[in-house]
Image 1 (cartoon, rainbow, N blue to C red):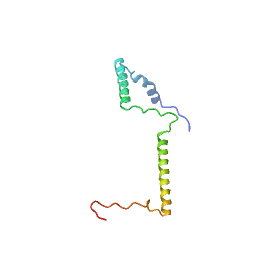
Image 2 (tube, one colour):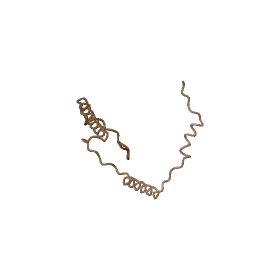
Image 3 (tube, one colour):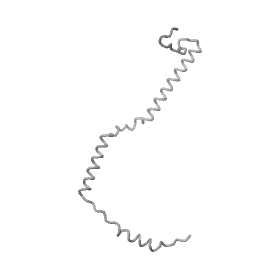
Image 4 (cartoon, rainbow, N blue to C red):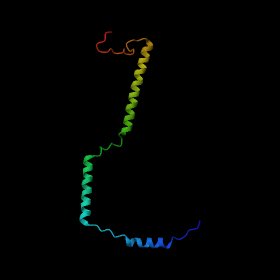
Length: 108
């Protein structure tokens, strides 16, 4: 595939484009007002949505804390299940499954 030069009309349009685009005129008063407004909006945003306190580098991340808590809960549940299974095998009735509750006004 050979490289062809762009058409003359395209080159002329590219050359005249900078001349056709007006130079931006910035009003210093408007620019200063925009800067003040931007600073005020940032300040309001910081007050409305404060950054959380930084977590120390040696502290576990919130996800790690949640995982550790779930592991502890799972271990406690497993230990309780093992105690109950051992008690049931030993014939203990104190740890048997709870009986269904009676409805109010119902006589057993």
